[in-house]
Amino acid sequence: MYLKMAKRVVLETDKRLVAKFLVNFGLKGAISVQRFKSRLKKGEYFPPFLYISVLNSCNLRCQGCWVDVSAKQEKIPADNMHRLIREAEEAGNSFFGILGGEPFMHKELLDILAEHPNCYFQIFTNGQLITEDKARQMRQLGNITPLISIEGTQWTSDVRRGKSEVLSKTMQGVENCLKQKLLTGISTSLCANNFGEMLNEQWLDRLIDMGVMYCWFHTYRPVGPDPKPELALTPDQQKQIREFVVEMRCRKPIAIIDAYYDHNGQALCPAATGISHHISPWGDIEPCPIVQFATDNIRDSRPLKEVFTSSAYLRDFRQTAAKATRGCIVLERPDLLKEVILRHSAKDGTARKSAMAELNAMTPKTSQYRKGQEIPEKSFAYKIAKKLFFHDFGAYEKYGL
Image 1 (cartoon, rainbow, N blue to C red):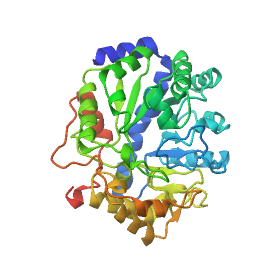
Image 2: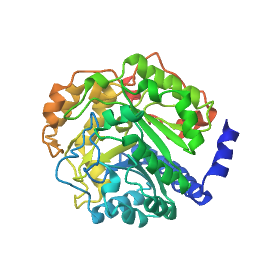
Image 3: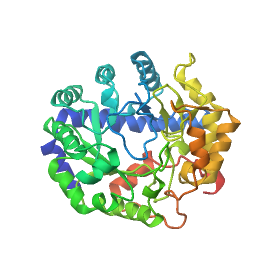
């Protein structure tokens, strides 16, 4: 399998883009994690990976979306983006996830990213606005990987995403990326109505045949103003995802990402471990994209490293979440999340200003944490990579989790 993957990389990609990935994401990303570990020992804090929602606007209307896509457009101005990226670089960071809304509705996006050639950017997108010209621009920049979301067959995609002909339009964006030999990924938010369609070998084989280099199976989170709790996965379905991912990593020449398990199959929350936090379109520094409350903002005049280190709210969130569960505190213990928010008078960071009412309406659900049912990595490569660079960093150890 490893040889097949290497052959795919050699034959199907632009080697300059692979080199950028290996240096900007691979080498520098590994260094950023080591610097993160060193900071923790000194009582300092700055997450090695930041996820940035550059604007709230979107051309689709997806079920269960927590973003204020219908509100007046708010976007992070170019000068704030540049400052954020520069100060993160100074802290040793090189990788940034770019989210929305739909990031490609931010007309300055590629121009902004072009000024940071030593970083690596993963753009979470529905792909519909990726024209041939935009794909060509991304190839020229070399330090961008588009992660394009596909939610099922044509009918399922239309239902999930609130528009018609969604799949065909998204696939055109995928094709434009692959023509330019971009390192292209496909993501899916697995839920009750697309689980069988997307979690299967045939879908992976199709992605491989197309030239897609990696995929990411997210788990649907029933949050936001219209959470659609009926779409939430059962505990057995969540277990099936883990089993499928672990097995396919040993058999298929395509990289499969997950963000919720370490090398031993123990669950983790990236926000609780401190490895990542989220920046909203309004500049609010949030624990993660679905926790839309904040006390801090990137527009603070202090150095951002100081803002992150001194934030009592973010620190309390990490500690409370790690003490309660190795899974998702939002799903499992919304009551504890509410207590953290109230303790720090964290403000509602949404345009709709109904986030607290939505939190009050939530009923506890299972997430990825199932003690005693861990499924360790089988792939040697994934096991080593996670053991070195993606684990809980001791966040749960003091609480016996």
